[in-house]
Every structure is written in C-alpha cells, then in structure tokens.
Image 1 (cartoon, chains in turn cyan, red):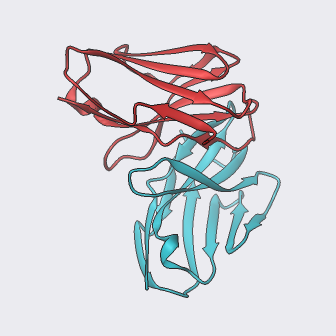
Image 2 (image 1 turned 60 degrees about the horizontal axis):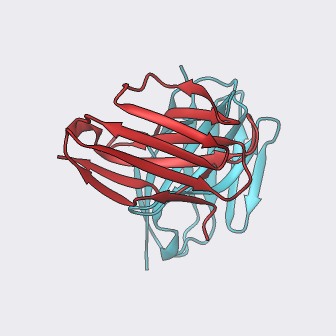
Amino acid sequence: KQEVTQIPAALSVPEGENLVLNCSFTDSAIYNLQWFRQDPGKGLTSLLLIQSSQREQTSGRLNASLDKSSGRSTLYIAASQPGDSATYLCASMEYGNKLVFGAGTILRVKS
Amino acid sequence: ETGVTQTPRHLVMGMTNKKSLKCEQHLGHNAMYWYKQSAKKPLELMFVYNFKEQTENNSVPSRFSPECPNSSHLFLHLHTLQPEDSALYLCASSQGRSGNTIYFGEGSWLTVV
C-alpha cells in the first residue's frame, strides 16, 4: 500500500527566501506525482503535475522534481511571498487516477 | 465560474437526518471523485466514477451512498452519520482514467451533531 510522507510538517520563513518542500513515497510504480496548494477552509488548487517519465516541471516561481527510483519529489519555491502561505500537499497517482496524499506541509511566509 | 462546484459549502446535520452533497463539473471531464479530509488525517479517496460507472469504493461505510447520474454531476447521499464523519468532503474531476490533472472543488464542510 502506497504511503506518502511530507517533510517538514510546518515551515516558517521570512519573505524572499527560497525554500524546498519534500515528499517521499514508498511504491515507485506511480503514474505521476501532483502538488497541490490548500488555503485555510478551501479546496485544493493544482500547482504542478510531473509524469512518471519526467524529471521536473516548472511554473513561474515553482519547480517540482521527481526521482522515482528513490521515491522522492521536491517542490522548490523561489523568492517566497506572504501570499504563498498555505498548506502544500503532494499526492502520488496510481492506476485509475487514484491519488494518495501526504499529510501536507504548512507554510508561513512572514512579511 | 469555477470548474468544479460543490453545494452546500457548509452543512450541519443530526445523526438521524438524511442529506445530500452535490457536485457539478463544468470541465467536460468523464471521471469524478469523492475525497474526505478529516482533522489531522491525510486526504483519503472515497469513490471513483468513470463515465457514470463506479470503479472504486475505498471501503466506505454504507451510510455514505454516492450517485452519478451523468458525467457532470455527482452526489453523496448521507444517512445515519456519526459525529466522527464530520469532515471536509471534496469532489474532484479529471479527463480519462490515468495520468491527467485532477481538479478539486471548494469542498463541503459537514458537521454531524
């Protein structure tokens, strides 16, 4: 059974810092890995999707990498802003579009 | 207009009530999902529908009864719930069965009293 772990559970940084969120998964037989953002009391917003054949994806200040062999993905956020404060979730996708989520990293960017 | 719309956003119900959550997607997708997000637990998949057919039931108790009348609408019928069922229920949709981005709604906050 797939297990997804996210480290750290919470992170507080000053505005402008570059930061890395980590995600690990136990079963490398994944279709892809998806990163989401969740604001308090809200649903999930898809940030990046990395197919299993890809190594990384970029969108603006966000860059996500995937290393299937080691069961790891990272989300890199450049020049963090207070508006980046949210919970970041990673999820591995199994056959049938089934997502297995980690518990999330709560990010706070201080102005 | 958001791609995946859920109603109601908040619901309080007693343990003997019957209520329903509704989800509608405007993205032309053919797969829809229900996920549950409880306090201090990771999001967990409940049901998957592809082309209106249920393809996954993740050992969900029968007091939760999904219904998918067409590819754009998904319901979750609730009956005789327990306080521990209080959670955020998220609907999602995607195109196809594997490898595509999944889009989530804003969720329905359910409180069982």
